[in-house]
Image 1 (tube, one colour):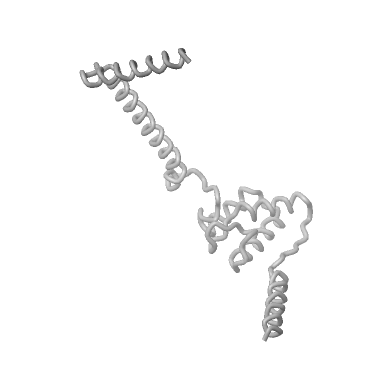
Image 2 (tube, rainbow, N blue to C red):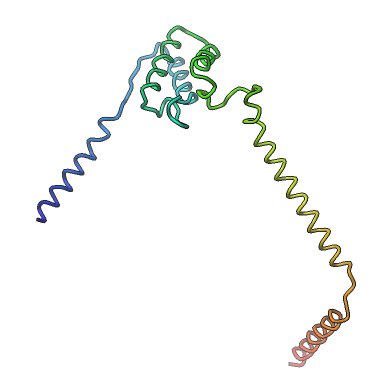
Length: 168
């Protein structure tokens, strides 16, 4: 029975050790180092249309593979960065960009963080003013008879303690 468990554990370890060998690794030759760097930049900046929040470099989906192939073709045709981005946006929409352009339909996307920050600052200012006014109203109000008596008692106790400490 003990040998069976050991055999299963060894089989599972061998299985897990072979999993990385099935990962997709793309190797491509580029005409120049500049083209390779542009390719790497694009696959990091462009988002996979199928995957959520995953760039082309990290996605193994078929559409990401197609986009990478198309990107290599566009780079081989010596297209400019603007032409490549425009082609991708035209074909797959603004979703393919991690940083969408500032347009009418993306104003909320770009403006919402600023509006939230401004709202938070206004809330903080209102709370600070409210607390300051509450403190000043409290400090300006005269003490009633009970409060004055309590204050006098505390001061007298503190004075008697001070005197007893000095005598020692």
